[in-house]
Every structure is written in structure tokens, then in C-alpha cells.
Length: 138
Image (cartoon, rainbow, N blue to C red; front, side, top):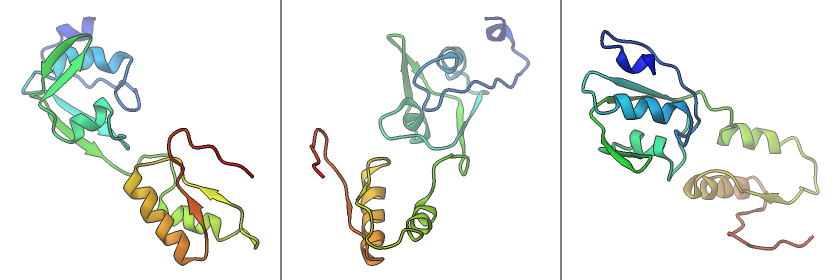
């Protein structure tokens, strides 16, 4: 709470992946409305998360039943995700011998899964993108 009284400037490091909970929401409540505040989002923010809304330019942030106007400058630093990218995944599957194991693309945004599915198909792989509640039999 003492951080809320600092007016001369401070760097606050608060980790919460997609800004969905924890201390970051408290810091947002006390700082997002300030024009001289800067927020640096490090890493990937999934669709539908508060972090993604900020990255996409949302002007309002909702937390604890309150709406906070976003006046802080929002910055992003990419390249810090722990997940493999498309080229890394294609390289990984290239190490499997035939017959190829069955692949299911279940993580990531739909357009990225479809693009990976197409690249895999061009390399001779079949990859399914299951739908919600879909049952799969082997």
C-alpha cells in the first residue's frame, strides 16, 4: 500500500501472466488512470484476457467491480514467451519417424493453429484441431 503514495516515480514489478489476478490488478487500480504512468507488458497475452485488452488499446480496465480509465502508456516487449513458435514446433515434429503419431493442436489462438495445421499438412502430417467438448477415440 505504501507504493500507492509514491508520487516521484517508481518501477513496480508484478507478475501475473495475463493480468487476471494478484498484485498487478491492485497496481493497475492505483496507476492506470495516471497520464504519467507506463505499463510494460512482457510476453504473450491471450485473447479475452485483461492483459490482451490493454495491449489492444482498451480505454477502460475493469477490476473489482470498478471501471478505471486507461490513461497510462502501454508498452509491450515480445519474445519472452516460454512456448515454442511455429518454426520450432515444425522442427520438433520433424524428428519423429513414420508412422507419424496423431497430432492435436489444442493450445494457442485459432488462426495460429490453422496456420500450423496447414504447414504440418504440407510436410506430410495430419493434425486435428479439436472443438470444445469433442470426444476422441483411439
